Every structure is written in structure tokens, then in C-alpha cells.
Length: 436
Image 1 (cartoon, rainbow, N blue to C red):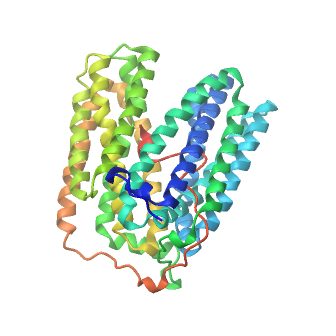
Image 2: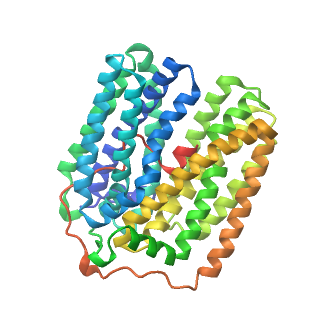
Image 3: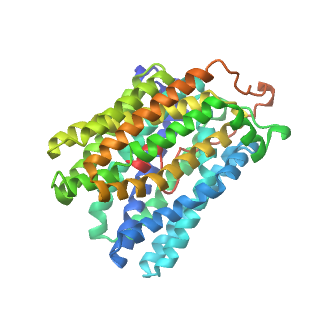
């Protein structure tokens, strides 16, 4: 069943995607409520920002260590089964955090639950990405990813706003409980999806299953490797604006905490605009990706010259919009230009690249801001982004004529499953959100 929709919202014309998008917004909102609750609880008890960073790191570690296994699992087994178990486990872990907070439990318990949450998210992510392709099909995948970026930004703003109000009135346990309840929307969507409207994908035959087969495939696909390397450079140096915004607010802009909050809001608005721009594009191409990457790198370098909050905020809007356009185009091309039966492993590899970029880029930019100043750091990081984009452009031109691994025949397509879940995990980590 499809309703006529404006081109910008064409994926919403599909009934299954409307259910998915609605549940996604609810669950992402709850997830960001939990993010604020956990960060505030750790900071309130320890007074240490490093302790907050440790909780974030503990959630990211499983992605670096187990991402390959998770991708292989998503390619070999029906992803809806993985999604159902993972989403239910996320809800249980959120309830456990609520109980621990109510009982004034030790921080070690929260750290353990953070690790478990990250572990579940590792296996949840590739399955959700693969299954999301079945919800909308290849024709509307780019539009659905763009609208998903808008939903994630909206859910982030809504979740953080609600959490900021509720944490002082009702306390952290209620926010953890709210996140647990938000997964009910996911389970309802699972029950109401119509399997006959899904778009089946090829699954891995035995000879192409497993981690080694995935690594061989990636090594042979030079274009995807170039995109991953470019994505690492863009995520590590180009969009760790939580670090550089804080340093600019405290230093050259002399704006303090209020200015930092304002800039964070402006950045979030920019991500929404970027998602809408991506949604109205008829096609998300490699040329669009490269042009946008070079443009945002130039704007980043120029932003270091800002002598006031207004000037810096004005540049942040197109930078944030460009970040979402880059990530949406990257995800679209990585999924549509690779073999269907390898999609889970490709998505898990992309997630590992993103996690590694965040782990490297944040500390590196922080050290540079302290050593040479935030303005010079923005100049150098912007120049590095431009250089990386030019190198990638040259490499993609060289590899354009080379054959890429061919997908398996559609005869191996999996049957249309009976359920679906939105692209959400307990701690939302889209590429742009993790580094913005």
C-alpha cells in the first residue's frame, strides 16, 4: 500500500515505513533521555568529565571488537529475529539501570550495564540496517536514510529537552524508565508490519558466509575501501564539533557555557536542515558526497577565523547540514553499491570505522586545541579534510573502471519476514550524531 507523497517524503508513502519511522522517533527520543540521565548521574557522583567519557568508551568498545561477527550474523540469519531479541534486551537493560539508580547502586553497575548495552547494540545495528533496506526497497532507500537523519535529530532535540526538564523534577531513574517504555513502540511496530509489502534481500550462501568471506569481499572492492578511509578522515577531523565548539566557546569566542549550549542547538538545527536537503535529492551520488565534503572542509577552516558567536553559529549551520548530507550519501552508496548478501558485514565494517574515528578524533582534536589553540586546530583540520577529499576523488576516479564483486543471484533471496524494527539502539550513534 502506497500513498502519494511529495518527493521529499516519498518513503513515507509506504505503510511499513510510516510505522518504522514513528517507532524510530519514539525510541530515539527515549534513548537520548537515557544518554543525558547516565551522563549526568556519572558526572554528579564523580565530578569528573573523564568518568563520563569512560562510560561512552565502554559502550563503543564492543563495536570495535565484535563488529565483524555481528555483520556475519546479520547476513546469515533472518535479521528480524536478531532485532526482536536485541530490542527486548535493550528494554531490560534500561529497566536495570532505572532500578540501580533508584537503589543508589554503585557506578561499577552502571559501567557494566553500559558495556552490555554496547554489546547488544553491536548485533542490533547490522540487522537493523539490513532489515531497513527491506522496509523501503532500493528505490527509496536514500530518501528513507535522509528522513531517518531528520528523525534522529528531532529525537535528539526532543529527548534532551525532555530529559533536561524531568531530571531535575523526577530524577534519573524516571529517564531510564522512559527509555525502557519507548521500546514498546518498537514491539508494536514489529507486530503491525505487513510482510507482503517488504522487499526481500539475498542472503549469504554457505560459501560466502562468515567473517573471512566478508574481508575478502571488502579487500576486492576498492571503491568501498576508499569511502571507508574518507569516512574515517571526515568523522575524526571534520565533525568532532563537540570538542571544537567547547574549545571555541571557552577560548576565542569567550561565550562560556551559555554560548556552548546555543552553538549545540544551532548545530542540531543544521542537522535537521541537512536531512531535509538530502531527502529532496532525487539521487545521492558520489560526486555530491565529494563536493559536499570539500565544501564543509573549507567552511570548517574558515570558521576558525570567527570573532563572535553569531559568525561562528552562522557557519555551523551549513557545516552541520553538510555532515548529514555526507553521512546519508555515504550510507546510501555503501549499501546500494555492494552485494546484498554482504550488506550486514559491510554495515558492521562501516560502524567500526565510525567508532574508531570517534575514538581517535576526539582526543586528537582536544590535544590540538590545548596545544595550538582551537582556531588553528579548525584551520588545520579543515585543510586535512579538503586534502583527504581530493585524494579520495583521485582514487575513486582511478578505480571507477575496475570491476567490483558481483552480488549473488536473486535465487538466494530470503523470504519476506513477518516483522520489522526501526533503526534504533539503546544509545543512538548515527555517524554524524556521534561526532557532532
